[in-house]
Image (cartoon, rainbow, N blue to C red):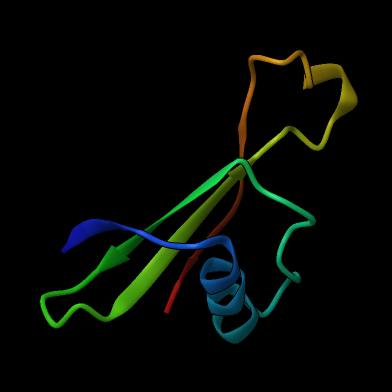
Length: 69
């Protein structure tokens, strides 16, 4: 397994297909994917601004979604 770059729309589509509890987040700062030996995406992490306004200090980020198949 290895880390690979992924676009926002690809990451959000992976969440729509494989994450049953919530929809993709409203936005993101960055996202990263994990691929297996056949280059199939098996997981994504979407990182964005904190949901809590008290933690949104301009320096803090939060993992908004972590999704694997």
